[in-house]
Image (cartoon, rainbow, N blue to C red):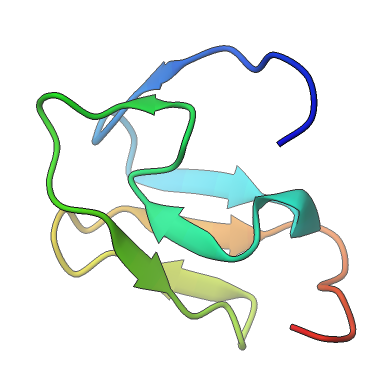
Length: 69
């Protein structure tokens, strides 16, 4: 993760847009507060979207995935 990103609350939204820079993707993400969240789980983005089995948050890939992903 390059630069300082604004911290967002975990489990606050139902859908998050992510980019190739966020891969490999896990929920909660690095810029989410984790103290009140669930254990980290890695999510496959092979179809351009994923859903967290813990909190139900959906992640949608915006832009192209890297060729090696």
